[in-house]
Image 1 (cartoon, one colour):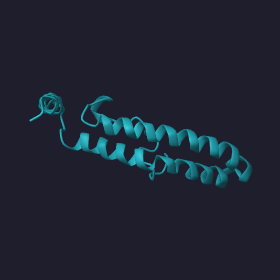
Image 2 (image 1 turned 180 degrees about the horizontal axis):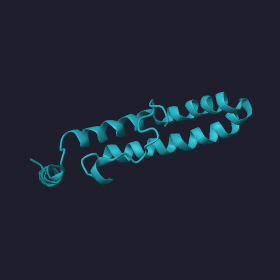
Image 3 (image 1 turned 45 degrees about the vertical axis):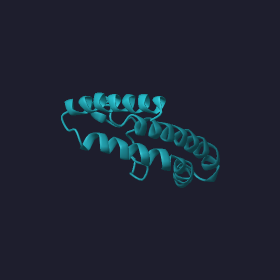
Image 4 (image 1 turned 120 degrees about the vertical axis):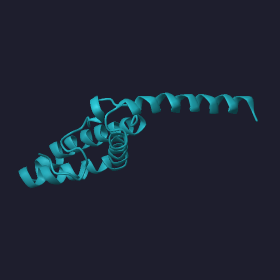
Length: 116
């Protein structure tokens, strides 16, 4: 076995064991990290849909002019935000940050939920 590969396997095993201990310290071990992982994957892969959804919602409320200007800017900003937060939540799903795996983007938490 290649020495570099052996060191990588040992390092990954150590990191896995270390983070497994962190996850066991949380109250609800299985559901919270998996919810964060699902939310992260959903937001990372579907974040781009914020653009047409915001154009449409602003168009329904205010007309075509605001939809083209404000709706486009709002959608682009939210698409970028949702996508990057999804990548972050996917990469850190096993770490209880923020507290108790709470969502960072809460209104809405998932893209197809209605805003409150």
